[in-house]
Each structure stands twice: as C-alpha cells, then as structure tokens.
Image 1 (cartoon, rainbow, N blue to C red):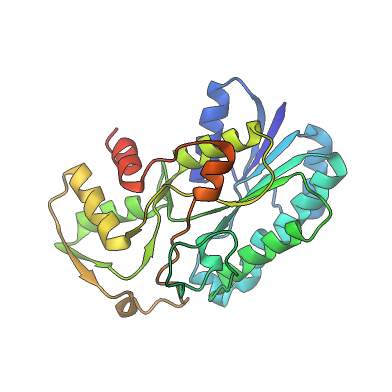
Image 2: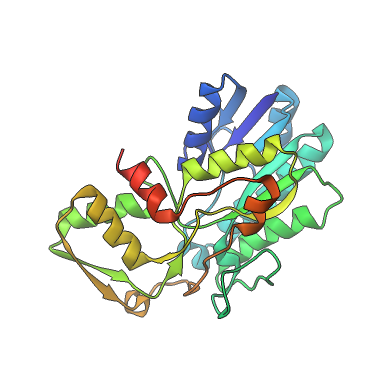
Length: 280
C-alpha cells in the first residue's frame, strides 16, 4: 500500500511520517513548496507519478486571525485544495483522509459536547473555509474518504500552543491565559494512532477525533507548567481582553464517543495524554 502525505513540514505530518516509517510503509511526503494543493495541475502530476492508495492531507492554512484579512489564502488550501485532492482521489481511486476543526461550531451549545449530528455554524473565515472543504467531499459521489475534526492539536515542533506557552514563560514574569476558551487538547500521536486504526477497520465518513474530556486554555497551560516544572504564575483572564481579529467559539469541545464505539478503541483523556507526551 502506497501512502501520499501532504504538508510534510507540519507537526501532524511529521508524526505520520515517523509512525509509517517505523511500520516500513511505502510513503511519499510532500511540502507546500513541492505540492501546492490549490494547484490542480500539480496535484494531478504527483498522483500520476505516485498512484497512491491512501492520501493523508495534513496541509492546512490555520492562521485564524490572518484568515479574516486574507480569507482567499485559507480557502485556497482548506477548501479548493481539498476539492482538488478529492478530484484526484476520484480519478486514481485513492482513499482520501483530511482534517477539519472544532471551529466549524459557534460555541453556543449548552447541553453537552458537540457531536457529529450537531449543525455547524462557523463564526470566522478559518472555520468557514474548513467547513466548505468538508461539504465538497460529503456532497460528492465519492465515498472513499475520512474527515476527522480535531481540536487544539499539539506535537513535536513550534506550531502549537505548548511551544508558544514555554516561550512566553521565558520572556515574561507572569502569563495571562483565557479561562473561557474551552475545547480538547489533542496530541498528534493520538490522531495518527486513531486514524490508522480507522483506516485498518475500513471506516468512512466524518468523525470527531480528539482526546477525551475537555479543558480551558488556562487549565491546559497550568497542566503543561506542572509537567514541565515551570514556576511561573498564570492569571486566568477573559479571552475578550486579547482583542483577536477573528471571533472564536468559547466552547467548542467535541465528543469522540461515536468514533470510539465504531472502531472499538479507547482514547485517553487529554491530561493523561499530555503527561505522557510532554513528560517524555
């Protein structure tokens, strides 16, 4: 089985590459500079050359605030790019796996975690671009796909909240972290493990893929400092004080129960996973 991984410089792609190499899988990984997925001609060229059995799309535009001003950049990658991969996957009969976000929801749900049955209602351009990519796949006649909505992803590298947090700690006497932004910190290790399990089980469709439980950014930051032994004061504050360009859902935690039950897998709680990954 031949794997094609897009967005190889990102933290999720790096985890896939590491895991699949350990399993001696045949894979090709491409960066944005090598394969800009918004360019259909380039996408087709690589599909013709590689003829992948499985396409794992880790390419994403995730600069949430910038997307408000440069929305076309978000749509080029998160919408048009996904549609190009869908077209090529259909042409070459490849299985397509791509990732969406909890930001497809508006954060107003009050009776539990978001499930796959809840109606999306994104409140920023980033979320809208991801939802458009989802819809183009779901509304097509092609059924060899998996869409996973994830949240607060972290792994190796500098592209996540944990790295930024530790940098802030080096440069500030104390930190201000939002107590009213709530979702699910999710490790790249969990995403890769569950994705490959779902693939092995022949799963198709849209699912929420997160670690279990939920937390505020403040709780997440406190846990990171506890594990790393960082002795800095963190003040819980309202997210409103940061004056972000893009609106963000206050509560976007998603339930992974459907995925767990469907493939019969246990997914660890966010704090246990964090302790394992960061404490290594």
